[in-house]
Length: 161
Image 1 (cartoon, rainbow, N blue to C red):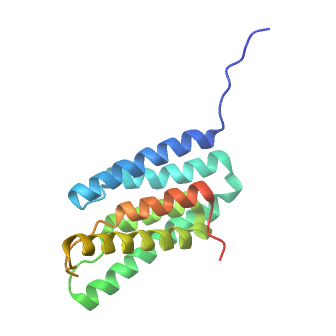
Image 2: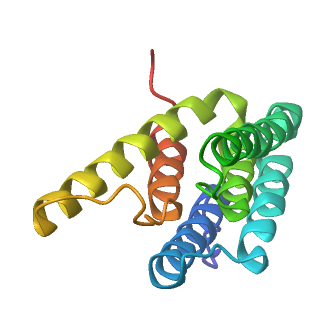
Image 3: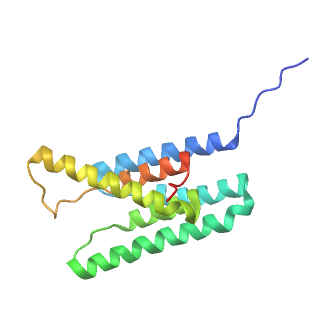
């Protein structure tokens, strides 16, 4: 009897692609304060394509999540710009939020944002302790925080509120 190669669950391959993309985006954002479209936009399409491949009946929820992620972050950015007269959240962050919605659907977005905000607060606290103070005008890359929130939510599911 010939041995047949085992083809693993497609979610393993999707997870590898998601993880590698999130690591690359995080590294770039830490070094350059930018989340390039060449990585964020394919991540949106990859999330939707992966959903179509694994669970096509869930595609509307994932598409709604992508739209909600993008629009909500653009609204926050516009409100900040109007209030502070400067940029506070980049368009790359909104595109990464759209990718998060594409991967975890609209139901997972609150978990992604909660985890990202917690990670961001932790980063600020560590920087404040290390520098003995914190300047509110100092830029903080939020992409790695969003990437962490997306990764944890994709692996373990949304937080039960």
